[in-house]
Structures are given as structure tokens and as C-alpha cells.
Length: 592
Image (cartoon, rainbow, N blue to C red; front, side, top):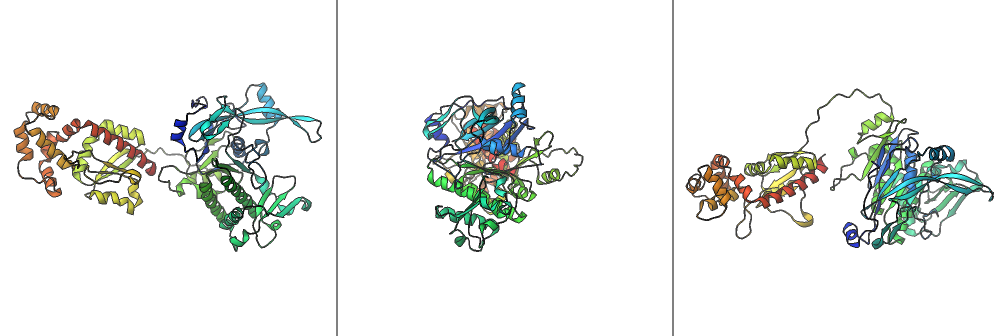
């Protein structure tokens, strides 16, 4: 809800920021757009989440996709003329160049009725939350005659709360009515104006002798990756800048083997996109404080064959990642949606999908479909009549927990109290299902090297198992708690209990609580030695230890020896619970 306010300090401390972001590696991202009441046009009670890399926005005509692009592009940009793109423009978005806000019906009428909308844009600036309110206001514009004026509606991104946002350590100050300093490029449909249908006298086509050679090669390679060039290396040696006077259309073309004036609409659009990426590449090279970028594209698929669309989205993804650019684009293409949909793109190791589809449904009262399948999107785009939804009882979610043997399984089942199970389910949304498989601990951990399936399960190993620590630590592997030798070596579950029984049956004062609990049941040192320690057992060896455990398991269960050991080692139990919950959260992100 928009009523919630982010209470982050407006002046953040150096210590706090140093922990959140590297001072030499700035990062600004747009997180979401929220529109409640009053509505902005027909958009209300709606939240648009933006992915770290590519966000495709789809939906029927007139549903509000371009409005969303305009609001997002308008919130950020650079106003200094020190840095400009290869089109000669500043890295900024301007709403009035994307959509028209009618002064009479969209501003004045709502101002009089006190129903002016206030969409909210949420950002992160070096990991610190920041909000902008899209404030609808007016301005006086001088007409082309230089004498008369007119009133226009405008949208101003205002800080929320209404004060400057300052990060002194990063040299960032965002004034109350200033744009977020995130370099922004908007590519609208002017990139598709056909050269052949334009006035020849207004077409400017000049060889660019000033472009950096690496950027020229980049443009040629980008285009070649999508539609293929005979020789991308040669094509990048001659770059032609082409524009149409009186429009915002401008792009750089490599050598095609024919005049740039003869390019297709798809080639024209592609060169505009490649030029925009080259502009960010140039900016990253020239600006030490480069914080990433935002590229906003209307009708990304326009002019492209379905196969070229798939290669385009792949190429965009590659360079968006390298240059830390968020791409937000609209589309009507099922090919693009299918290529980008999370169903066809496995989630990375951090459990976060870097691309997403935002699908808007219902042109009368637009709403965002939550995690729609590709089939659901296709059905809505084609207006295929939906079938009645049958009530299906949701299957409970479980994380499988693999253990090396039955002894470890018993130890774990004893640890998994009802309280702990609830904690795990609350943290990761899934229960636990234990599976002992009689595999050595090293082999058990190594399975995920051969099959990625074993990254989607939990692996619990004995305390005496060797596990990787530091950067190479497997995040889905957890050690059982266990006893230790004087040398510091940990014990298996069997030896842990064996050594515990030896201690409490000996003449000492250790573990008084356990002794008292056993005494209440008539269990003394003689009983312990007779039923649990009688005979010669080399507990340090695997097979004798297992034989000892299995032969005495009924007594161990009846006397609750494992439970007593756990109660005497609460600090180890707490440590295990913390690690188990963390591993469950990590694994659940890869599983569900």
C-alpha cells in the first residue's frame, strides 16, 4: 500500500553505506511502480515489479503499457551536459516526449476535484531505499512565435518524504524535484519512421568519424548477433549516423553492403537499440561513478521476425548484464514472452529470476496477473474463453532431506521437534521429508557435482563428516550436532551416544540433569553398563559402531538417550537449527 513510508535516513552514515555497497561500484536500480487511488488514467491498485535485468510488459491495446513506460522513464536521468549519448541527447527520460497529458481533462479537472494521482516509484541507491512521487502539475510554455504562451500538464518526480536525499560518501544528492541520477534512454516508435516515406531533404546520413572504434565494433557485433552480417569486423569499420530532421529518430548503422537509407524497419529499429547500448558502454568507460542504467523501449518486437526476436532478447540480456542495465520494454509478441518467461529460464544460484513478464489483464480495470504461466498469457492475449476452475487441493510442499544412513535419520528425526518443523515451514514455505540412502558422506555431498537435482534438496551429514567452508561451502549441506574427542575431532551419531553413555555410567559428576532423569525411571549405572556397554565394541570403526547401535536401538529409544544428549547440548542444537533453517530457505528458492 502507498500509505507505508520508507523511514530510511535521508543522510546515511559512511559505516552503514560501506556495508551495503562498494563506494567504488555504484548501483542504482528501479524496484517497482505503485499506483493506488486516485487512479492515474485507468491504472489504480496496481504494483509493477521490475526485474534486475529485463522486464517485459504485455497486455491488450489501450491497457496502459505506454503510461507505465512514461512514468518509469520520467523518474530518472542525467541533467548534466557533460555526458551525452551517441544520439547527442542527454541520458534522461521525459514523459511529455512519450505520452501526452491533457491539461484540461487530466490536470485541471482533477486539480479542482482534488483527485490528482500520485504514483510512487521505488528505487535502491547503493542498497538504500528511495521513493519518488510522480506529482502532476502545470507549467507555462512559450509557443514557437516567441510571444504567446500556453499551459501544459507535466509530471515532476518529487522525493518522498519531501527532502533532499544525500549520500555524501558516494557524492550523490537528489534534490526534492530532481531526477534520480540513473542514466536513462527511452526508445519510442520514432525509431521505426520509414526512411522511404520521409521527405528526402530532411534525411541526414553522414559517415561518423568521431565514434570510438570499440563502440563501432560493438554496434556491428550487436546487429550481427541478431540478423547476421557478412563480415561484422569489416562492417564496424564504417559507421553512418542517420536521422530525420524534425523528429527524434537517430541511429548509427554499420556497413551493410547497401545504403543505410535502404534498411528495413527491423534493421532501423535494431540499429537504434544497438546505438543505445553503445551509448551506455561509452558512458561506463567515461564516467567513474557509473551506477548502471535504465533502457525503456516501446514495442520491442516491432519489425522483427520471430526468430530474430529470440536472438534479440538473448543479445539484449547478454549486454544488459555486462553493462548493468535494466531493460523495461512493452511487447505484443508471444515469441518474446516465451523466450523471456521464467518457465523457460532456470533461476540462478541466488534464487532470483533476473528477467520477468508483467502481464496486464482487463482493459476496463487493469490488473497484474500474479506469476502467470505462458499458457495463461497466451490464452488472455488470444481471448480464449477460460474453463471453469476446479477446486484443486494444493499439494503440500516438501523439501527432501538426504542422509547417509538410518542412524543419522533417527538422530535428525529426534532433532525435528514440532516447534522446529513449524519454524522451517514458516521460513521457507515447505515441510521436510527425510530420506536415508546408505551413501557415505563424501559421496552424498558430491552428488550435486553430477546432477543439479541434488542442489534442490537438503543434505544432512554426520558431525564427523568433512565439509567445505568459506566461499566453497555448499549452502544446502548441514552437519548434525555431535560429541567431540579431546583432540577436537567430531563423533558420528553412534559414537556420540556411546561416549555419552560411558560418561554418565562412570563415577563422576557430569550431566546431573540426565542422571536425575534416568534415576526417576530406575535406570542407574549398572543398568547402563549392562544394557548399553556390555561387550567389546570398537566404536571408532564404522561397522562395529553400526552393529552396536542397531542391537541396542530399542533400549536407546525407550530410555530416550538421544533426547537426553540433545538436552545437555542446547548450544549445538541451536546452532544446528539456525544452519538448517538457512539451508532450507536457500534450497526452497531453487525448488519452488
